[in-house]
Amino acid sequence: MRRDGCDLVGMTGMPEAGLARELGLDYACLAVVANWAAGCSADEEITLAEVLAHVEAASAGLPALFDALLG
Image 1 (tube, helix red, strand yellow):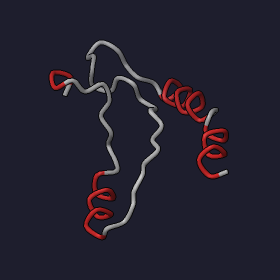
Image 2 (tube, rainbow, N blue to C red):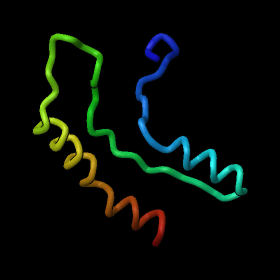
Image 3 (tube, rainbow, N blue to C red):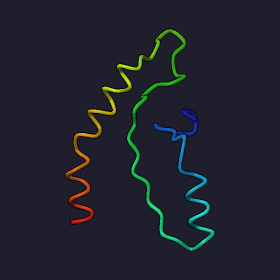
């Protein structure tokens, strides 16, 4: 994927997006990146603490984002 220019690979959303398109529904996805480098290095182990720290950091701005989108 990196050779194709990808910086991020999502693991969910495609089934929902495809079904929404088939049904003519609008679809949007807001994803939190919680694991920045799974599978990128055989030498480094990713810990649950690191994943949870990424989730916490990324989630901090969600209330303001939701207010802006829905307010």
